[in-house]
Length: 124
Image 1 (cartoon, rainbow, N blue to C red):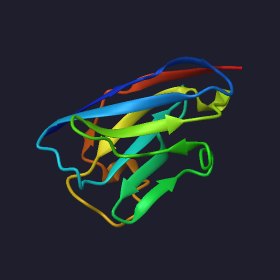
Image 2: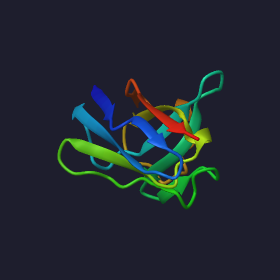
Image 3: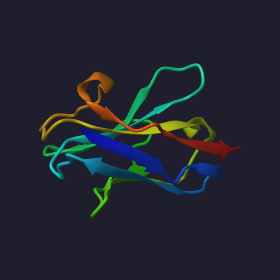
């Protein structure tokens, strides 16, 4: 089992930056494919970014503004968010697969483990 806990969310003005962290515990592997998803009120959970053996991948809506570096130690993953927009407001979730992958991994059902999410609110 893997437990994931997100942190770093909050309220920020449009144009600002936030860095989300994803702490992992349990039977973790630094090679596992991992990703970030988000869910805005009234909308489905949407892919934000992923990191796999194939590289890093981003949704078109965040490309050029967000990055998804791996962490070290207990922090398995980050999401660096720059030039935030009002439409980035959502609950952000960290997710992990069982093991490594070379794929894009943009579908939520490809992930086995999920955190509870952290709220990001961007004021316009």
